[in-house]
Amino acid sequence: MGNMNEYHISSPLLQAAIWGGTECNQWIGGYTNGDRGYYGRALVEYFACRLFGIHRAPGYEPPYVAGFGFSDRVRFGKISEEEFEKAYEEFEELYYFTQKELLASGCVSNGKVKLNRSLKSYETDEILPQLLNKNAIIEFPANIITSYAYDGRLFDYGSWMSIVREVPVELIVLHFDCLYHPPYTCASSMHGGEYEVWVLEKNIFGYTRQEANCFKIKAIPVMDKEKAEKRIKEGPFMRRTVADYKEGSLLSSQIEEGFLPCQGNWIIRKLIELEKTKNEERTHGYWRYE
Image (cartoon, rainbow, N blue to C red; front, side):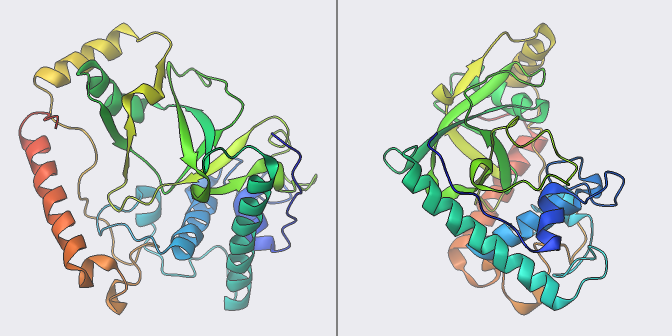
């Protein structure tokens, strides 16, 4: 990775959302440091959705966002509209700064950057049955922003499965090599110790589809393999389906304004109808692979 310039954030709100406060017992730990209540993640993902025009279909919002029931300027303490807009403007600047630095760094090949991440159990629970079934394309849950790395390390944090994929550069929201880390923030071990890259997922139903050869396996635990084989034969699909979330969540707060694409676009309405049918088949029947 070539040397990149660093973006200095001046907005206290955006700084807190990413890094956390100046003391570790503050109410907001930041996306990178505990993030009690997921306030930092919620704000960062809301800004990403606003920048890219992403709106999850109602009922498919991330549960840590949807459960709050807040509107646009969620109660990250009592903040003014000016503070909120300043934070968003800087987030937008940070994205375009990141894009410029990545393209100048030499790490982009054919418009893509090679990244890796170790997968969590809720992901491997969905991925393994499909791999054992020899699916060419694997579908699994994805946040609006997912943390990847560029260090090439696999199977971190006790995980036995990792993913290595070529990510289109325009989907990289943030790269820690071009973000200044203030020395007074709590997540002091992150800068230089983690190789954090935030990747955007635009799917309105909260999942991603990747080629099977992206997944690397260390050793499949016996219990996980038995569970996967059982699901292939008889288990219902476990991925979260349409849930009864509170209206007014961060990503559905503009429903009343007719802002969500599912309200005015017949193609999106049809996709939602097909997704609902597919989930009903998976939930009430058996796991069906396409």
